[in-house]
Length: 150
Image (cartoon, rainbow, N blue to C red; front, top):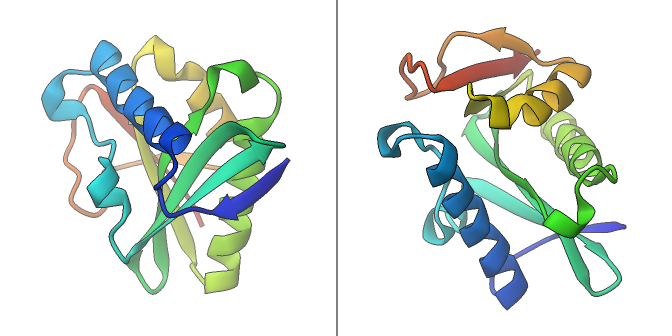
């Protein structure tokens, strides 16, 4: 599997991001959805990566710079054919390495509080993330949990 910086122009990448957005609507009310749309993922403070097995898209993830010492994980999504094959862990590891390379002292994320997000929360817990209060522009929301890693 290779992980590459992506410009979000390929059809399969666009489809995966749209699938991610649609998936959020199944589990969260509209005001609790913090997933980014394509145009938001193309902003300069966000770096977006895709993971590939040959010509097949395995997943994606992004890193948003909140300030020079604090980053946020965004848009982690695994293609359905690659679930439970280590794809998300590989993307997360790549993002963690990039955050260290950038000199971030803190990396944070928001994910859902519903049962559908248990696998994501377990992944982040296993990587050393701990639950925290809202950060950046987030507010308390019963549909969200916030995690951080120093």
